[in-house]
Length: 333
View 1 (cartoon, rainbow, N blue to C red):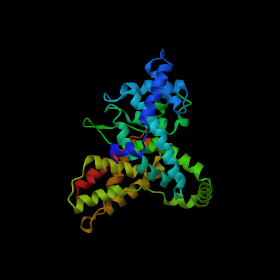
View 2 (cartoon, helix red, strand yellow):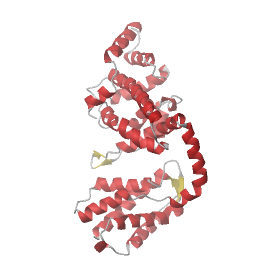
View 3 (cartoon, helix red, strand yellow):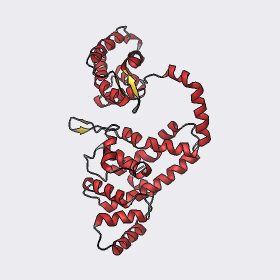
View 4 (tube, rainbow, N blue to C red):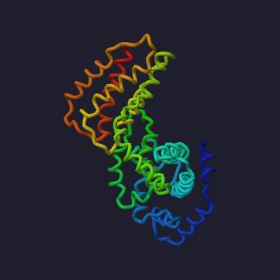
């Protein structure tokens, strides 16, 4: 969806909004520019207190792009309310059996192009923490109105990261979208489809033992990468390799859940071995890959200060280790 088409799909009445803004300006001549915009947003039923809106506006004001204004930002806040209304209608009519499938679909249909669009309102070096916070402010205000911006931004430091490689910012937009919006989508799904949630809850109670035995690291992206290298002689791009490893780790290790290294170590070795083998043609097969992986992870285990960490911490620590393993593996082909 191109920028123009996006604005048409979620059209707001700019003339009416501007008229209301000018009316507020005339009513509060002694107020400063930021306070007038804050009162304008309250008039548009944004749903925040005046102090909270002022806090948000004052934070984002210095990082707005030079070709945009704080009023443009306010108009987009109004547009976000319309997107949320349309998105909730879509969720309500959806035939999804669980919130996870709803999360994937709604992010793709409603927010992927929005992400490209809204980022143009800010300076290039805006952090992913600030973007993630913006999504929750615009689309899930009840979660942020109880605290201030600094506290909220601090909380997001554990969820999203701005990654710079060779002076270039790595595209982690999808990850930021999921972190910023998944809890909102799940909450809306549960409220709009309570009967499905109840059924799913009963199924989970009955299937919990079965689920625990089939949980594994998903190496689909790594497998495709190796196949492209072996069959199509396609050079492996470092960014694609990093994304594949992140996908492998995050398929098992979840933010907010604590894991003991000893509990998933063997599963990681087995699943990584299987994923890399699956990408190879028959004439490439050999038997020492699991030994290579085990040896490198033994050295990693010796350096561990804490054997029990959050899923996100394990992903950060293991990512460069697995990257080194895959590079060494590729070098032997």
